[in-house]
Structures are given as C-alpha cells and as structure tokens.
Length: 269
Image: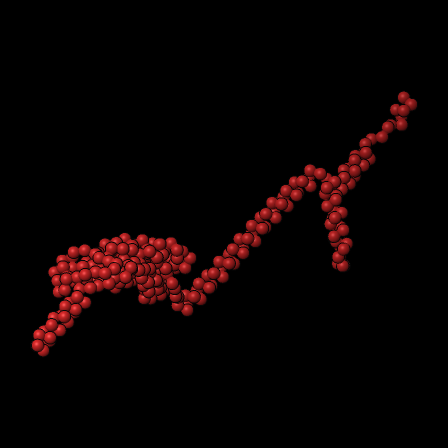
C-alpha cells in the first residue's frame, strides 16, 4: 500500500512539474516567439500560453520603447576639429519574429550601429554645424539607423545628441572667433549707419538748395545752438549767397565808375 501511495505521489508531482513547465504568462507588452523542434511556428501573446514541454521553446520579446545611451565617441569634423560626442537613442521592437531570428542580440547590434553611424554622419559636417544644427543632424542619424535596423524588426524613433565636448584650446579659439565676429558685425552696423546718415544729409542739402530762405533759417538755428554753449570762441557762418551778392554789387559799382562821362563841348553843340 505504501508503494502505491509513493507511486501516485510521484506521478502527481511529475504531472504538476510538466504542467508548470508548459505554462507561460505574457504581459501586455510582451510577445513570445515559439519554436517547435527548432523551427519557427509563430508569435504568441499576450496572456496564457501553453507549450509542449521539451518540444516547444519560447523567446520573450519586450515591445516597449527602449532607451540606449550611446557611449562617448571621438569624432573629427570636416574642418579637422577633434570633439567628443555622445547621444541617446529611443527605439522599440515592431516585429518580434525578425528581432529574434534575424539578429543575435538586437540591443547590442543597435548600439554598435549607432556608434558607427554617429561618427560617420558627424564627420561629414563642420564644428559650427554640430553646435548650431543639432536637429538636422539628429534627423539624419535617425533616418539612417531606422533604415538599417528595419531588417531586424526595430523602429528607431528618436535620436538626440546630448553633448559635444571640446578641448580647452578649441574653446579659447572659438571664443576669439566669436569676439571677432561681434566686432565685424559692429563695424558693419556702424558703416550702415554712416551710409544712412549720408543719404539723409544729401536729401536735406537738396531740399535746402531749392529754398534759400530755408538755408538762412538753418544758419539762425546754428547761431542759437552755439550761443547756448560756454565756448570762448564762436564761429560765425557766413552765407555764401550774401558774399555773392556783395561781389555782384561791387562789380556793378566798378562798372559804373569805368563808364565814360558826357563831353562838355558836345553839350553846347
């Protein structure tokens, strides 16, 4: 009797163990890639999954978005500047079958591919573009990674360049370059202001030349401005028109004096 009891207990334990090994529970964000005798037979989940022990095997695949921190890479830009760049990548599995069958470890493969793509893309651009056009570079890297990982059932959604580190010598060079650029812009703005002022003065001169009385009013205004100061020397503007008037009067006077007068003998003629 005791032998039969032991036998039944062994049978029950074996059945329970067999049943436990055949039951799988997959969460909502998980899928199971099932192989039967080594051959792919389908993707199952989520929920309760029953497998044939020792005949079927299952590989769990997480479908949630994964965050991959790309290690710092040494990049030489197109203008021969050495920088250290690191980035972060957001990707997820969209095809569980391909992520298991087409690549051994899709996370490691994506990480290695991201490192080489980061160096390749940034090496084609100058340092100024790395610093000022990150959005365009992020999109370029994301498109390349998404195209190459499509065969693995991976969707790369976001690529963000986190940091671009420079050497201390390059930081000083960039600071001097920025200062020179600010000085150049200041000189250009000053020259444009001088040009605009010259144009306004020319327009004002054209207007004043058409109305002589306006020039006289301008002289009077200048005298008022000078008299308000405490200067010991006052420059009095002499109107050119007035000088011309005096010269004309002097010329007329000289002409009248040179005219011959009447002959006395002819008056009684």
